[in-house]
Image (cartoon, rainbow, N blue to C red):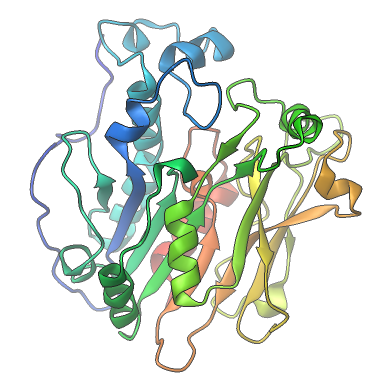
Length: 339
């Protein structure tokens, strides 16, 4: 039986521009990967690739054993796993669409059909919130082009804009094999190889825009003792001037979330709004240094010519692939209606 959807789907269609409506944000998602590069990875390579859908089914058994996930209905290679990411944002898209009266536009740097799309006026002209999801592997060498940087800088001069950057984890960045094994045992996800480094595009974008952040590690959040519930965030409410964390206590649980390390001491230009407690029962180099939490949500308020806001949050916070909560829905709503 085919998967049931609530609306007709289009594919390989030109984007239909959304008209500006006062008080109604137009939200766009930009996946930084080259879909063909990721999908065509050599399956004998152990590191720096996504799992195949067959591997997902094996590890998550029996979660994907109903007919809709079988070979006659769903892709079984890496491309199937990439499609899971697309499907996992549908709830976010639906909620934001209902709030804003605008559909969420979804773009890819290189899509399934091989068409490339750089970030320029084709995307920015009818976008108020641009969410750049950094799920490209470093070795695919995705880099923000000078023309893209210039276009985004110009767009951020416009009042009401918001750039959300979501570099994903950087697991096993060291040549020390024992450390790689420690990181692997810490997060405990059999689908993540000993080295899986993400986010070259977002790193190049942050460097060009002067965003003093580096995505590090893949850290396992702590759970409330005796439960399967994620430990609440440590929230700096006094710094949350936009109310982005109103009604929010937790994000969703994901086994390997990045630490957004600040590379500046300037606390006026960048604010850590939320930190996530780490599972301290599983050794990790980051916790061995004395850290008990990682930076999970960051805000850079407008500054100088930049009238727009810059946020940093992991892409998995906007998906339901790893579960969802009322608290997460509140966060999505706050993002959708932010001033």
